[in-house]
Amino acid sequence: MRTLTLTSVVLLAGSLVGACSDGALEPGRTAKDQSETDREGRQIVVVNQLAQGNGVARTIQQGLDMVASGGTVKVKPGTYNERVHIDRGVTLEGSDLESGSVIISQILTTTPAPATVGVIQIQTTDPVVIRDLKVRQDNIRGVNALFRGVDLTVERVSFDGISNISPIVGNGVSVTNNAGLSLRRARLVVRESRFSVGGVGIVIGGDVDALVEGNEVEHVRSRAVCVIVNPTGQGAGATVPAGALTNVEIKGNLFSNCGTDALRFAGRGFNAIAIQGALGAETRGFIRISGNTFRTTDAIPGAPDACPTSAILFEFYSGVIERNVVSNVVRSCAVVGPRNSPGAIFVGSLVKDAVSGQLIRAADVVVRFNDFGQNAIAGLRIGSNQRTSLDATCNWWGDPTGPADSPDGIRDRVLVDAGGADPQVLPFAARQVAGTTDAAC
Image 1 (cartoon, rainbow, N blue to C red):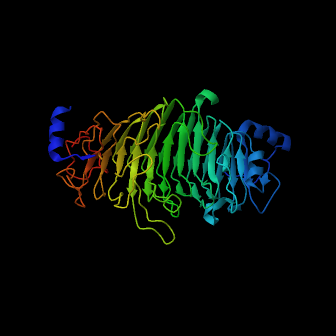
Image 2: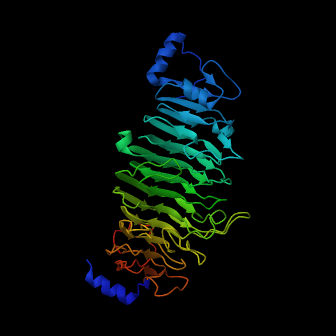
Image 3: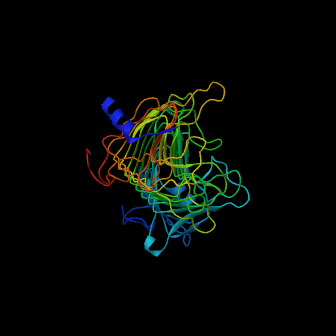
Protein backbone atom coordinates (compact mmCIF):
# COMPACT_ATOMS: atom_id res chain seq x y z
CA MET A 1 0.00 0.00 0.00
CA ARG A 2 1.23 3.49 -0.71
CA THR A 3 0.05 7.00 0.01
CA LEU A 4 -0.45 9.23 -3.02
CA THR A 5 1.73 12.28 -2.29
CA LEU A 6 1.37 15.73 -3.76
CA THR A 7 4.56 15.20 -5.76
CA SER A 8 3.21 12.02 -7.32
CA VAL A 9 -0.07 13.78 -8.01
CA VAL A 10 1.70 16.51 -10.00
CA LEU A 11 3.73 13.97 -11.96
CA LEU A 12 0.63 11.89 -12.64
CA ALA A 13 -1.31 14.94 -13.77
CA GLY A 14 1.30 15.70 -16.35
CA SER A 15 0.98 12.20 -17.82
CA LEU A 16 -2.82 12.03 -17.98
CA VAL A 17 -5.31 13.97 -19.99
CA GLY A 18 -59.21 10.06 -7.64
CA ALA A 19 -61.40 10.89 -4.51
CA CYS A 20 -62.02 8.46 -1.59
CA SER A 21 -65.24 6.33 -1.71
CA ASP A 22 -67.28 4.79 1.14
CA GLY A 23 -68.47 1.97 -1.09
CA ALA A 24 -71.94 3.41 -1.83
CA LEU A 25 -73.28 3.07 -5.38
CA GLU A 26 -73.30 6.09 -7.62
CA PRO A 27 -76.80 7.56 -8.16
CA GLY A 28 -78.86 5.68 -10.74
CA ARG A 29 -76.52 2.68 -10.88
CA THR A 30 -77.20 -0.90 -9.85
CA ALA A 31 -74.83 -3.24 -8.09
CA LYS A 32 -74.36 -5.04 -11.42
CA ASP A 33 -73.38 -1.74 -13.11
CA GLN A 34 -70.93 -0.99 -10.30
CA SER A 35 -69.38 -4.45 -10.58
CA GLU A 36 -68.87 -4.05 -14.32
CA THR A 37 -67.15 -0.71 -13.71
CA ASP A 38 -64.93 -2.34 -11.08
CA ARG A 39 -63.72 -4.88 -13.62
CA GLU A 40 -62.69 -1.99 -15.84
CA GLY A 41 -60.23 -0.90 -13.15
CA ARG A 42 -61.97 2.12 -11.63
CA GLN A 43 -62.67 0.65 -8.22
CA ILE A 44 -61.53 2.18 -4.95
CA VAL A 45 -61.64 -0.15 -1.97
CA VAL A 46 -61.50 1.21 1.58
CA VAL A 47 -59.95 -0.83 4.38
CA ASN A 48 -61.24 -0.03 7.86
CA GLN A 49 -60.80 -2.26 10.90
CA LEU A 50 -63.95 -0.82 12.42
CA ALA A 51 -66.33 -1.42 9.53
CA GLN A 52 -67.08 -3.99 6.86
CA GLY A 53 -69.47 -4.43 3.95
CA ASN A 54 -70.70 -2.17 1.17
CA GLY A 55 -67.28 -2.20 -0.49
CA VAL A 56 -65.35 -1.74 2.78
CA ALA A 57 -62.80 -4.39 3.79
CA ARG A 58 -61.65 -5.10 7.32
CA THR A 59 -58.17 -6.38 6.41
CA ILE A 60 -55.66 -5.17 3.86
CA GLN A 61 -55.52 -8.55 2.16
CA GLN A 62 -59.30 -8.58 1.84
CA GLY A 63 -59.11 -5.16 0.23
CA LEU A 64 -56.40 -6.31 -2.19
CA ASP A 65 -58.51 -9.32 -3.14
CA MET A 66 -61.53 -7.08 -3.81
CA VAL A 67 -59.84 -4.39 -5.88
CA ALA A 68 -59.76 -4.51 -9.66
CA SER A 69 -56.49 -4.44 -11.55
CA GLY A 70 -55.36 -0.83 -11.73
CA GLY A 71 -57.47 0.17 -8.74
CA THR A 72 -56.63 1.71 -5.38
CA VAL A 73 -56.83 0.32 -1.86
CA LYS A 74 -57.12 3.10 0.72
CA VAL A 75 -56.30 1.97 4.24
CA LYS A 76 -57.67 3.77 7.29
CA PRO A 77 -55.36 4.35 10.29
CA GLY A 78 -54.67 1.41 12.56
CA THR A 79 -52.27 -1.48 13.10
CA TYR A 80 -52.93 -4.39 10.76
CA ASN A 81 -51.26 -7.58 11.95
CA GLU A 82 -51.00 -9.43 8.67
CA ARG A 83 -48.82 -10.39 5.74
CA VAL A 84 -50.16 -9.40 2.37
CA HIS A 85 -49.52 -10.45 -1.20
CA ILE A 86 -50.21 -8.26 -4.21
CA ASP A 87 -51.05 -10.22 -7.35
CA ARG A 88 -52.33 -7.45 -9.62
CA GLY A 89 -51.49 -3.87 -10.51
CA VAL A 90 -52.72 -1.69 -7.67
CA THR A 91 -52.03 1.37 -5.54
CA LEU A 92 -51.90 0.56 -1.82
CA GLU A 93 -51.94 3.72 0.26
CA GLY A 94 -52.65 5.03 3.71
CA SER A 95 -55.53 7.46 4.06
CA ASP A 96 -56.85 9.91 6.70
CA LEU A 97 -53.27 10.21 7.97
CA GLU A 98 -54.12 13.32 9.96
CA SER A 99 -55.93 11.03 12.41
CA GLY A 100 -53.19 8.40 12.76
CA SER A 101 -50.71 6.09 11.06
CA VAL A 102 -51.36 3.03 8.93
CA ILE A 103 -49.10 0.23 10.19
CA ILE A 104 -48.70 -3.22 8.65
CA SER A 105 -47.04 -5.30 11.34
CA GLN A 106 -45.34 -8.65 11.66
CA ILE A 107 -43.36 -9.25 14.85
CA LEU A 108 -41.65 -12.66 14.96
CA THR A 109 -39.99 -13.59 18.24
CA THR A 110 -38.94 -17.25 17.96
CA THR A 111 -38.10 -18.15 14.35
CA PRO A 112 -37.31 -15.70 11.55
CA ALA A 113 -39.22 -15.85 8.30
CA PRO A 114 -37.40 -17.23 5.24
CA ALA A 115 -35.67 -14.61 3.09
CA THR A 116 -38.22 -15.36 0.38
CA VAL A 117 -41.06 -14.06 2.58
CA GLY A 118 -41.96 -10.43 3.27
CA VAL A 119 -44.62 -8.49 5.11
CA ILE A 120 -45.66 -7.30 1.64
CA GLN A 121 -45.04 -9.75 -1.18
CA ILE A 122 -45.20 -8.56 -4.80
CA GLN A 123 -46.43 -11.31 -7.13
CA THR A 124 -47.25 -9.41 -10.31
CA THR A 125 -45.43 -7.63 -13.11
CA ASP A 126 -48.17 -5.00 -13.40
CA PRO A 127 -47.44 -1.55 -11.88
CA VAL A 128 -47.70 -1.48 -8.08
CA VAL A 129 -47.48 1.66 -5.93
CA ILE A 130 -47.12 1.49 -2.14
CA ARG A 131 -47.21 4.79 -0.27
CA ASP A 132 -47.95 6.55 3.01
CA LEU A 133 -47.64 3.43 5.19
CA LYS A 134 -45.50 2.14 8.03
CA VAL A 135 -44.12 -1.39 7.94
CA ARG A 136 -43.14 -2.98 11.27
CA GLN A 137 -40.94 -5.99 10.54
CA ASP A 138 -39.18 -7.91 13.30
CA ASN A 139 -37.19 -10.86 11.91
CA ILE A 140 -38.92 -10.68 8.55
CA ARG A 141 -38.37 -8.70 5.37
CA GLY A 142 -40.50 -5.66 4.58
CA VAL A 143 -41.28 -5.62 0.84
CA ASN A 144 -40.14 -8.59 -1.23
CA ALA A 145 -40.29 -8.53 -5.05
CA LEU A 146 -38.33 -11.56 -6.16
CA PHE A 147 -37.79 -13.59 -9.35
CA ARG A 148 -39.93 -11.49 -11.69
CA GLY A 149 -39.84 -8.27 -13.69
CA VAL A 150 -41.80 -6.18 -11.23
CA ASP A 151 -42.80 -2.54 -11.71
CA LEU A 152 -42.71 -1.25 -8.14
CA THR A 153 -42.84 2.23 -6.63
CA VAL A 154 -42.41 2.75 -2.88
CA GLU A 155 -43.10 6.30 -1.66
CA ARG A 156 -43.20 7.79 1.82
CA VAL A 157 -43.08 4.41 3.53
CA SER A 158 -41.40 3.92 6.89
CA PHE A 159 -39.70 0.58 7.58
CA ASP A 160 -38.87 -0.25 11.19
CA GLY A 161 -37.71 -3.51 12.69
CA ILE A 162 -35.07 -5.61 14.38
CA SER A 163 -33.35 -8.86 13.46
CA ASN A 164 -32.22 -10.51 16.67
CA ILE A 165 -32.70 -14.21 15.82
CA SER A 166 -30.31 -16.24 13.68
CA PRO A 167 -30.29 -16.34 10.71
CA ILE A 168 -30.50 -12.59 10.21
CA VAL A 169 -33.54 -11.67 8.10
CA GLY A 170 -34.84 -8.12 7.87
CA ASN A 171 -34.23 -6.21 4.63
CA GLY A 172 -36.50 -3.24 3.97
CA VAL A 173 -37.03 -3.53 0.19
CA SER A 174 -35.60 -6.39 -1.88
CA VAL A 175 -35.88 -6.72 -5.66
CA THR A 176 -34.11 -9.46 -7.62
CA ASN A 177 -34.69 -10.43 -11.22
CA ASN A 178 -33.10 -12.39 -14.04
CA ALA A 179 -34.66 -11.28 -17.31
CA GLY A 180 -33.56 -14.47 -19.03
CA LEU A 181 -35.93 -16.36 -16.72
CA SER A 182 -38.68 -13.78 -16.13
CA LEU A 183 -38.57 -12.49 -19.76
CA ARG A 184 -38.66 -8.84 -18.69
CA ARG A 185 -36.64 -6.28 -16.76
CA ALA A 186 -37.67 -5.09 -13.33
CA ARG A 187 -38.28 -1.45 -12.43
CA LEU A 188 -37.96 -0.06 -8.90
CA VAL A 189 -38.42 3.42 -7.43
CA VAL A 190 -37.89 4.02 -3.70
CA ARG A 191 -38.51 7.63 -2.81
CA GLU A 192 -38.89 9.75 0.34
CA SER A 193 -38.96 6.71 2.59
CA ARG A 194 -37.30 5.92 5.90
CA PHE A 195 -35.44 2.77 6.95
CA SER A 196 -34.39 1.56 10.39
CA VAL A 197 -34.31 -2.21 10.02
CA GLY A 198 -32.30 -5.22 11.12
CA GLY A 199 -31.18 -6.21 7.64
CA VAL A 200 -30.12 -4.22 4.60
CA GLY A 201 -32.23 -1.16 3.80
CA ILE A 202 -32.54 -1.75 0.04
CA VAL A 203 -31.22 -4.69 -2.00
CA ILE A 204 -31.18 -4.58 -5.81
CA GLY A 205 -29.99 -7.60 -7.75
CA GLY A 206 -29.85 -8.63 -11.39
CA ASP A 207 -31.78 -7.14 -14.30
CA VAL A 208 -33.23 -4.07 -12.63
CA ASP A 209 -33.58 -0.38 -13.46
CA ALA A 210 -33.80 1.43 -10.13
CA LEU A 211 -34.03 4.91 -8.62
CA VAL A 212 -33.33 5.40 -4.91
CA GLU A 213 -34.03 9.04 -4.14
CA GLY A 214 -34.61 11.30 -1.16
CA ASN A 215 -34.66 8.57 1.48
CA GLU A 216 -33.30 8.50 5.02
CA VAL A 217 -31.55 5.33 6.15
CA GLU A 218 -30.39 4.99 9.73
CA HIS A 219 -30.49 1.54 11.24
CA VAL A 220 -30.62 2.79 14.81
CA ARG A 221 -30.12 -0.58 16.48
CA SER A 222 -28.35 -2.75 13.89
CA ARG A 223 -26.04 -0.31 12.06
CA ALA A 224 -26.50 -2.57 9.04
CA VAL A 225 -25.80 -1.80 5.38
CA CYS A 226 -27.92 0.91 3.73
CA VAL A 227 -27.96 -0.26 0.07
CA ILE A 228 -26.57 -3.29 -1.75
CA VAL A 229 -26.44 -3.60 -5.54
CA ASN A 230 -25.08 -6.76 -7.14
CA PRO A 231 -25.68 -9.18 -10.04
CA THR A 232 -27.69 -11.76 -8.09
CA GLY A 233 -29.51 -10.26 -5.09
CA GLN A 234 -29.06 -11.24 -1.46
CA GLY A 235 -30.41 -13.73 1.04
CA ALA A 236 -30.65 -17.51 1.26
CA GLY A 237 -33.01 -18.72 -1.45
CA ALA A 238 -33.68 -15.17 -2.61
CA THR A 239 -30.99 -14.85 -5.27
CA VAL A 240 -31.14 -15.30 -9.05
CA PRO A 241 -28.51 -16.26 -11.62
CA ALA A 242 -26.38 -13.23 -12.45
CA GLY A 243 -28.34 -10.74 -14.52
CA ALA A 244 -27.11 -9.13 -17.71
CA LEU A 245 -27.65 -5.43 -16.95
CA THR A 246 -28.16 -3.47 -13.71
CA ASN A 247 -28.78 0.29 -13.85
CA VAL A 248 -29.21 2.18 -10.59
CA GLU A 249 -29.30 5.84 -9.56
CA ILE A 250 -28.84 6.62 -5.86
CA LYS A 251 -29.32 10.33 -5.25
CA GLY A 252 -30.20 12.87 -2.62
CA ASN A 253 -30.35 10.41 0.30
CA LEU A 254 -29.18 10.71 3.91
CA PHE A 255 -27.21 7.67 5.08
CA SER A 256 -26.45 7.73 8.80
CA ASN A 257 -24.36 5.21 10.73
CA CYS A 258 -24.73 2.41 8.20
CA GLY A 259 -22.28 -0.41 7.82
CA THR A 260 -21.12 -1.54 11.26
CA ASP A 261 -23.29 -4.39 12.56
CA ALA A 262 -20.65 -5.06 15.20
CA LEU A 263 -22.93 -6.76 17.73
CA ARG A 264 -23.80 -9.55 15.30
CA PHE A 265 -20.64 -9.64 13.16
CA ALA A 266 -17.81 -8.63 15.48
CA GLY A 267 -14.64 -7.61 13.70
CA ARG A 268 -16.19 -7.58 10.23
CA GLY A 269 -16.26 -4.36 8.25
CA PHE A 270 -19.32 -3.29 6.30
CA ASN A 271 -20.24 -0.26 4.24
CA ALA A 272 -23.10 2.21 3.88
CA ILE A 273 -23.47 1.57 0.14
CA ALA A 274 -22.02 -1.62 -1.34
CA ILE A 275 -21.88 -1.84 -5.14
CA GLN A 276 -20.70 -5.41 -5.48
CA GLY A 277 -19.58 -7.64 -8.29
CA ALA A 278 -19.46 -11.41 -8.54
CA LEU A 279 -16.60 -13.62 -9.61
CA GLY A 280 -17.09 -14.83 -13.17
CA ALA A 281 -20.28 -12.81 -13.74
CA GLU A 282 -20.64 -10.92 -17.02
CA THR A 283 -23.22 -8.47 -15.67
CA ARG A 284 -22.85 -4.91 -16.91
CA GLY A 285 -24.56 -1.70 -15.93
CA PHE A 286 -24.22 1.90 -14.83
CA ILE A 287 -24.46 3.04 -11.21
CA ARG A 288 -24.74 6.75 -10.41
CA ILE A 289 -24.29 7.80 -6.77
CA SER A 290 -24.85 11.54 -6.45
CA GLY A 291 -25.90 14.23 -4.02
CA ASN A 292 -25.98 11.97 -0.96
CA THR A 293 -24.85 12.79 2.56
CA PHE A 294 -23.06 10.21 4.69
CA ARG A 295 -22.50 10.72 8.38
CA THR A 296 -21.28 8.85 11.42
CA THR A 297 -22.50 9.90 14.86
CA ASP A 298 -22.36 8.55 18.39
CA ALA A 299 -24.48 5.51 19.11
CA ILE A 300 -27.61 5.46 21.19
CA PRO A 301 -27.56 3.31 24.37
CA GLY A 302 -27.78 -0.39 23.51
CA ALA A 303 -26.55 0.02 19.93
CA PRO A 304 -23.02 -0.55 18.62
CA ASP A 305 -20.82 2.41 17.85
CA ALA A 306 -21.01 3.26 14.18
CA CYS A 307 -17.71 2.39 12.53
CA PRO A 308 -18.16 1.63 8.82
CA THR A 309 -15.24 0.46 6.70
CA SER A 310 -16.42 2.78 3.89
CA ALA A 311 -19.27 5.07 3.00
CA ILE A 312 -19.15 3.69 -0.55
CA LEU A 313 -17.68 0.44 -1.82
CA PHE A 314 -17.69 0.43 -5.63
CA GLU A 315 -16.77 -2.74 -7.52
CA PHE A 316 -17.28 -4.20 -10.97
CA TYR A 317 -19.71 -1.75 -12.63
CA SER A 318 -19.36 1.45 -14.63
CA GLY A 319 -20.59 4.61 -13.01
CA VAL A 320 -20.17 8.02 -11.44
CA ILE A 321 -19.72 9.02 -7.79
CA GLU A 322 -20.24 12.77 -7.57
CA ARG A 323 -21.42 15.62 -5.33
CA ASN A 324 -21.61 13.49 -2.20
CA VAL A 325 -20.66 14.65 1.29
CA VAL A 326 -18.38 12.00 2.77
CA SER A 327 -16.63 13.90 5.54
CA ASN A 328 -16.00 12.49 9.02
CA VAL A 329 -17.47 9.11 8.13
CA VAL A 330 -14.58 6.67 8.63
CA ARG A 331 -13.12 6.53 12.12
CA SER A 332 -9.91 5.01 13.44
CA CYS A 333 -11.85 1.95 14.64
CA ALA A 334 -12.60 0.92 11.02
CA VAL A 335 -11.45 -2.60 10.13
CA VAL A 336 -10.69 -4.41 6.91
CA GLY A 337 -13.89 -5.96 5.63
CA PRO A 338 -14.48 -9.06 3.52
CA ARG A 339 -14.50 -6.94 0.34
CA ASN A 340 -12.56 -3.75 1.06
CA SER A 341 -10.13 -1.87 3.26
CA PRO A 342 -10.94 1.31 5.21
CA GLY A 343 -11.47 4.49 3.22
CA ALA A 344 -14.45 6.80 2.80
CA ILE A 345 -14.77 5.69 -0.84
CA PHE A 346 -13.15 2.41 -1.81
CA VAL A 347 -12.94 1.61 -5.52
CA GLY A 348 -11.95 -1.96 -6.26
CA SER A 349 -12.28 -5.25 -4.41
CA LEU A 350 -10.39 -7.64 -2.16
CA VAL A 351 -12.46 -10.59 -3.38
CA LYS A 352 -10.65 -13.28 -5.34
CA ASP A 353 -11.15 -16.93 -6.15
CA ALA A 354 -9.47 -19.08 -3.51
CA VAL A 355 -8.18 -21.59 -6.09
CA SER A 356 -7.44 -19.64 -9.26
CA GLY A 357 -6.70 -16.28 -7.66
CA GLN A 358 -9.09 -14.62 -10.13
CA LEU A 359 -10.08 -11.11 -9.10
CA ILE A 360 -13.42 -9.41 -9.51
CA ARG A 361 -13.52 -7.25 -12.63
CA ALA A 362 -12.23 -3.71 -12.08
CA ALA A 363 -14.74 -0.89 -11.80
CA ASP A 364 -14.93 1.85 -14.44
CA VAL A 365 -16.01 4.83 -12.35
CA VAL A 366 -15.44 8.57 -12.09
CA VAL A 367 -15.12 10.13 -8.61
CA ARG A 368 -15.53 13.91 -8.73
CA PHE A 369 -17.05 16.99 -7.05
CA ASN A 370 -17.27 15.22 -3.69
CA ASP A 371 -16.56 16.76 -0.29
CA PHE A 372 -14.02 14.72 1.67
CA GLY A 373 -12.35 15.62 4.96
CA GLN A 374 -11.74 14.41 8.53
CA ASN A 375 -11.85 10.74 7.60
CA ALA A 376 -9.43 8.46 9.40
CA ILE A 377 -7.13 6.32 7.26
CA ALA A 378 -8.19 7.60 3.82
CA GLY A 379 -10.76 9.60 1.91
CA LEU A 380 -10.32 7.75 -1.40
CA ARG A 381 -8.77 4.31 -1.54
CA ILE A 382 -7.95 2.33 -4.67
CA GLY A 383 -7.91 -1.46 -4.61
CA SER A 384 -5.20 -3.63 -6.06
CA ASN A 385 -7.44 -4.90 -8.89
CA GLN A 386 -7.86 -1.36 -10.28
CA ARG A 387 -5.04 -1.37 -12.83
CA THR A 388 -6.22 1.67 -14.83
CA SER A 389 -6.10 5.22 -13.46
CA LEU A 390 -9.51 6.70 -12.71
CA ASP A 391 -10.67 10.32 -12.79
CA ALA A 392 -10.80 11.73 -9.25
CA THR A 393 -10.54 15.41 -10.13
CA CYS A 394 -12.35 18.40 -8.67
CA ASN A 395 -12.86 16.89 -5.22
CA TRP A 396 -12.59 18.87 -2.00
CA TRP A 397 -10.14 17.16 0.34
CA GLY A 398 -10.74 19.30 3.41
CA ASP A 399 -8.32 22.03 2.38
CA PRO A 400 -7.51 23.88 -0.87
CA THR A 401 -4.03 22.30 -0.90
CA GLY A 402 -5.48 18.90 -1.80
CA PRO A 403 -5.10 15.47 -0.24
CA ALA A 404 -2.79 14.97 2.72
CA ASP A 405 0.47 13.04 2.65
CA SER A 406 -0.33 11.67 6.13
CA PRO A 407 -3.39 11.94 8.38
CA ASP A 408 -3.75 15.41 9.88
CA GLY A 409 -7.37 15.37 11.06
CA ILE A 410 -8.51 17.83 8.38
CA ARG A 411 -7.35 16.78 4.93
CA ASP A 412 -7.98 13.27 3.64
CA ARG A 413 -5.40 11.00 2.13
CA VAL A 414 -5.57 9.07 -1.12
CA LEU A 415 -4.30 5.53 -0.62
CA VAL A 416 -3.47 3.10 -3.41
CA ASP A 417 -3.11 -0.57 -2.54
CA ALA A 418 -0.25 -2.53 -4.08
CA GLY A 419 -0.95 -3.22 -7.75
CA GLY A 420 -3.53 -0.47 -8.10
CA ALA A 421 -3.12 2.53 -10.40
CA ASP A 422 -2.76 6.05 -9.01
CA PRO A 423 -5.91 8.09 -9.69
CA GLN A 424 -5.82 11.47 -11.38
CA VAL A 425 -6.65 13.96 -8.62
CA LEU A 426 -5.50 17.28 -10.12
CA PRO A 427 -7.04 19.78 -10.27
CA PHE A 428 -8.39 19.97 -6.73
CA ALA A 429 -11.50 21.87 -5.75
CA ALA A 430 -10.61 25.04 -3.86
CA ARG A 431 -13.79 24.94 -1.77
CA GLN A 432 -16.58 22.56 -0.82
CA VAL A 433 -18.28 21.59 -4.05
CA ALA A 434 -20.79 18.82 -3.32
CA GLY A 435 -23.68 21.25 -2.98
CA THR A 436 -22.80 23.33 -6.01
CA THR A 437 -23.48 23.07 -9.72
CA ASP A 438 -19.83 23.72 -10.60
CA ALA A 439 -18.80 22.04 -13.84
CA ALA A 440 -15.07 22.69 -13.42
CA CYS A 441 -12.58 23.48 -10.70
